[in-house]
Image (cartoon, rainbow, N blue to C red; front, top):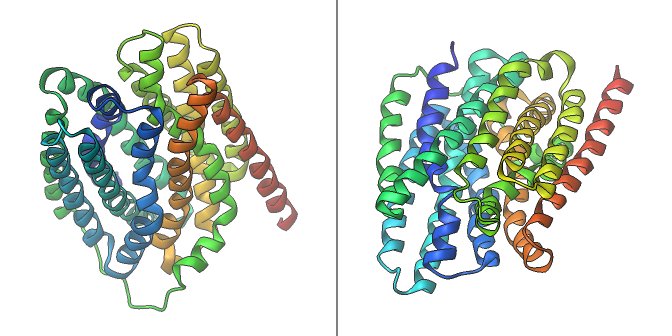
Length: 383
């Protein structure tokens, strides 16, 4: 119950981002006439900005001034993304310029979104305590992926009726609703204490962070390329794939989201990245839309608990006064994977076809399994 207002804020704030996922690649590919490499660069630009600016800045503001300051700043930034979409649409007759403006919008997204999610995570841990960090990561993350799952079909519907302008309007207006929600949540200003530098906090969480980087490629592959895979195979809209991904994520969190706190983050993550790899192999092999959606659901379910399990390991390695920085640093490893997956996946798709991207996602998930087992053995040795 203490997390419900934060979950609602995250859901409403990220809903317009979910609307953009299935249609922005198609808009750039079909309306601007650009190939998969440029689509990959566009979708990865957000995560470059997150790594270089967003996570560090969001963590510092959340730890130093409080999450109640950080979340509204992020929401205003998301509104600015919608404004950038409108500017890009004004230059559709000049594809190169329109594309660069869309890239600028994605860069701004990479700065704005960390303020919302990083602050919400640290806010939740402050309210429930570090012993429940797995639950906080699980429920806040479920709100985020629920927004993506619900936003995807809404984005397809809006795009079919109003074009990308419908997505732009939603990105400007919907986050404004969240400002009222955040204003009603009690938040305390953090006590002034000396905090370690951000790079030192990142060093503390580097092992679970690296495991997250490897396992995140599968999730990034669906976000960036599944819409084009659907078009290539003549399956129509890929909204169902995004919904399946989000549904798998939510069901896993609801059914077994308590396990990382009880059994240990690394132990749960080891099993779940194997499930994630199986989902990627199903998409790679899929003879039809339903089997590919089943693969997306398995990917979402496996990734849900992998992110949560590795996150529990990260929180346990960080000092209490730097949990915002720890969350920012941990999720920055996800951004690294997202940023690289776009252009690298685009190049791989050009050389070996779009399906090969999902084989690479399965390999990345299996590599993270090795790290999860190493963390589990290390924990057993300390015990």
